[in-house]
Amino acid sequence: AQRVTQPEKLLSVFKGAPVELKCNYSYSGSPELFWYVQYSRQRLQLLLRHISRESIKGFTADLNKGETSFHLKKPFAQEEDSAMYYCALSGKGNNRLAFGKGNQVVVIP
Amino acid sequence: KAGVTQTPRYLIKTRGQQVTLSCSPISGHRSVSWYQQTPGQGLQFLFEYFSETQRNKGNFPGRFSGRQFSNSRSEMNVSTLELGDSALYLCASSSGLDRSTDTQYFGPGTRLTVL
Image (cartoon, rainbow over all chains, first blue to last red; front, side, top):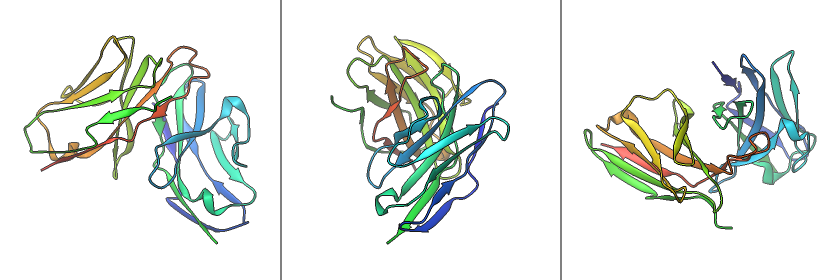
């Protein structure tokens, strides 16, 4: 079974402060991990995926297989980062995404 | 490129009725996946269609079904509606080919309310 856990529902941070969203997963095979973001009144969209190992909008996420985690980090939060963030996983080579419950991030100016 | 479109955007039905939702993928995409989003359960995978065939199925009862047409447009149907089927239904399209780099693009969703 695949499961994704995002422990904090709401995270408020001040502009310029670091932000870290935690994501833990359970999966018996080799998962692919993703972070999706939904800005106000916009569609759910892919932010980044572990396989590409790139930084998007200043965000990075490292897959830690030992701790089964894929935490999302940004060193300096911006107001435009206020959004809902979802961690998701799929089995290797399949499109079936299992999502966490999401984190609402509010960046305080 | 036009994005994923879903129709209708809002729907109100009563218990026992059935409903059909439609999803038009991005041009050239052959995979369409459906998700149900509710406050209690979050986003849950319903099924995926690729080239008119169901390729993956989530853990939903048989009242939830879908199909895909030759132009890759997809429909999902829910029969004998229950109050708990009230949700936002999202579809996502992707090329469905190189799955290691495939990206799912989501539509705006259809908000279904069952009274």
